[in-house]
Length: 320
Image (cartoon, rainbow, N blue to C red; front, side, top):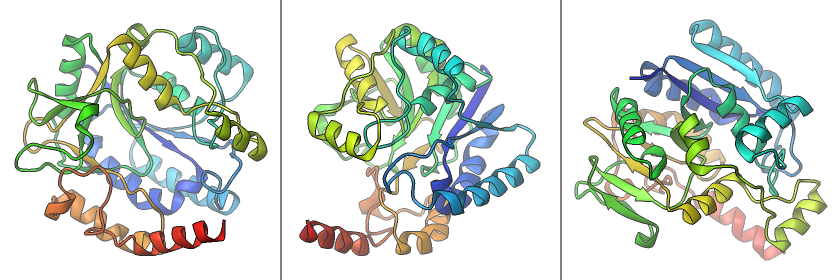
């Protein structure tokens, strides 16, 4: 098996969940990798979603990363470099020398994803967003994923199974977007790329996908981006997804050999979520999942009561 970098994208606004989720990610995946690369984006976007409480959370994030680094010599903390020289190098590596946006139209990460891939010491990279929860705890999944990428030219990445496994081996979602894949246990080949979590061979990705080209967001999003002061570009996972469709490529999600590896995504932030987060992490690590959570990528109400979020969203829509 080749050496692997675990690479996690972080920003100051992530601190309230990262203080608990990042140590959880290191517990679950640390034994499977040789380097842990924590990529910190200090370029503040416009708008609340990606810039909330930036100033007050920045020193707290720095302290968290300092403590984690002191405890594990494999951890390397790197700030995203937006210098012209680095931007040109990343553009040449991934975009054939064409424009590499700093952010997407929402103010979400763009440049930082490609910076993290390039900064990894090893060509095999397991990427996570800062809020992803990891269940199963397999110590063989990474080697299984490497074997799949090495043997199949139709794949650009592998991901752990989305959601804890169902007994019947199915997953939720529109079946037009994926198909069962019998090459691995609980395997599914997806047409859509996801930047939340992926394992890839960086060199094979560049070779198979070829030079990417940044695309403008739909007109209404371009207008919102310009008003907010953000770049007018579609998010990178949409860009990669369109490229996969054009070239007949895909991603492979799979559980793998027992105990397997799977993910959960908490789609909202709320007081209830932060209060329940320690228990949620404990349940994920122990595999204590209710039946209606199984096969589901996003955290369901049976784990976290999202009613406060839904009520706030209804009030917001009524005010518009």
